[in-house]
Amino acid sequence: MYIVTNRTVDESKHSENEAFGSKPIEGPNELRLAEATRRGNRWHIDILPDQVTPSMAKSVDLNPDYTYPASAYVARKLIEKSGHGAQKSGRNLLLFVHGYNNDMTDVLDRAETLEQNYGVEVIVFSWPANGGGVHGVLSYKSDKRDALASVGAFNRVLEKLEVLVSDFHAQYVMDLEARAEARFADNAAAWDRYFAKEVEKHCPFTVNLMLHSMGNYLYKHLLGSSVYSGDRLLFDNVVMVAADTNNENHAEWVDRIPYRNRLYITINENDGALKASRLKMGEQQKARLGHYLRRLDSRVATYIDFTGQPYVGDSHAYFEDKPLNNKKVLEFFRVALNGQVAEKPTRYDPSRNVHLSLIHISEPTRLGMIS
Image (tube, rainbow, N blue to C red; front, side, top):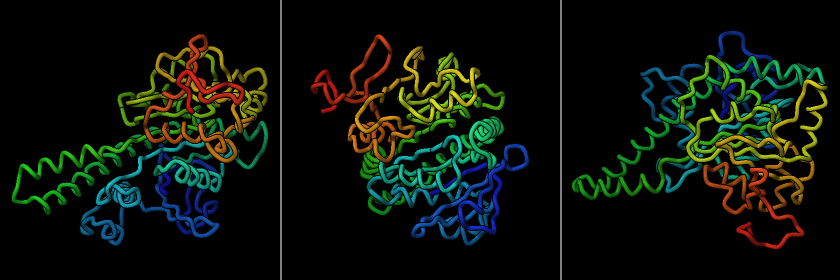
């Protein structure tokens, strides 16, 4: 998988916790790209050069005599990995932004789990979220400062992803044109029919954003920043999971989030990590968006309530591990993270403006719920 980061990097190191540092890169929102490969129980990291080397260019069928940014190499590799191009079908892209107190092993293991559980191709944005080597309240405050310092870098991530997706689309179209030419070079009408049919079947893929925990805090502050370009319609679905940011007045910034299909906010009132988060800052820390079922007043968000559902418990990451024993949880995230409409099988409670994502064990199957 591929990582884009504003952490310091050491190109001579290849283990995840040596190649990536715990501090932001010095400089105006500088970013680096890296490739992570699973080797047994370990990760192997290659920090990519800013400019593609001739051998790298040749390996992905780029002209080695030309100069390309690392993103061009990543776009070609993603085509190969995700099954677009010569394959009959492909995987959708998911940009994953992690939360508080995550080292790189945590981040990569979680991203790999997302790929395995939901059939997506994950690109990770990793910001310095290690707590600066401290724990508890100091760690939490340190990561909040690092999140604020990462706002400009995150904006550049969105810019780079837009270019990468554009390159991805362009390469897909080029491959498809080559296949059409090979089959129907002497029949223009058949060429056009084949091309149109294949585009409708397989392209475009969806591009989606998943923000977990304090990753939502980072996005909130980007939306309010002077560096933010608000006209970037990049994502089909935006999925805000266990948002560690204030519920109060959240509609003011949530309603500014651009998306093509759905904006989901998931809530678990019993979320143990968000309860602890609220306590860490004392009275200054207000009710968190990801564990509070009042004032759900965004005009554009679709709120999904996971509270009290089988296997969810006090989980802060109910998109993985034990909560997935509940197949309805698994199905919600599979559909949402692939850019589709995930709330159709739910029951809507208009009094609270929230969708009940699952059936409680004591309830019969009815009212359009998942059966």
